[in-house]
Image (tube, rainbow, N blue to C red; front, side, top):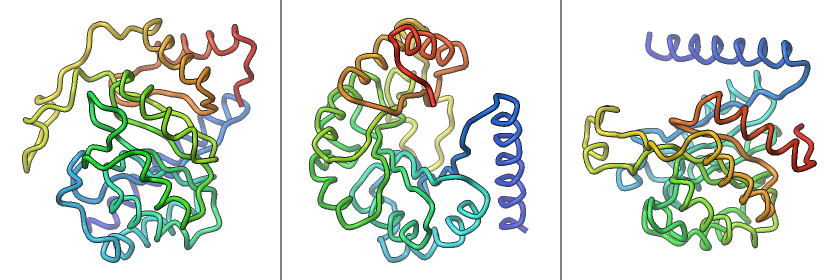
Length: 229
């Protein structure tokens, strides 16, 4: 059945991540929790009570097999509330990552203010707040607002030119997205190092940010005298 297939995929991914951490000598495994219906479409997300119900089994399974939970690509206050209600039921650390407007990092993709997230986050147990799957330029702006939340914060941006209208249809495919050609490893690392200067303690990469980007970023972090844990 569908549920069984999904659990098999989760378990295979977790096993691969555990093997990578062991081969590296250290590292934690995150249980990734994405949007329930469609990425970047806060307008069609379930109400918080319904989302909590749908997320509960997902959270329970991932929490039992991972080191912490990472709610990703949240595009609205309502999406955040539904997912956090479910993760409140576990004692695992919880990180939550938001996707912001491509050209205005002070806004979520829903149009709501990033600064208003504090009203939702303060009612839940959160261990870190991040920006993900957004243009790095917008990430820089978003972090200026997240700095005031009193939580560890960070970001992992994407390498898309933008989230196109074609990707916001009812049945999107990746053909509607295009990769940037001005965001090589050195260019991406420059953005991430600036986020660290802003106070970020968690940095990485999302879609179209590959191993070469992360390798360069790790080098620059070490060269700057920071520790990677």
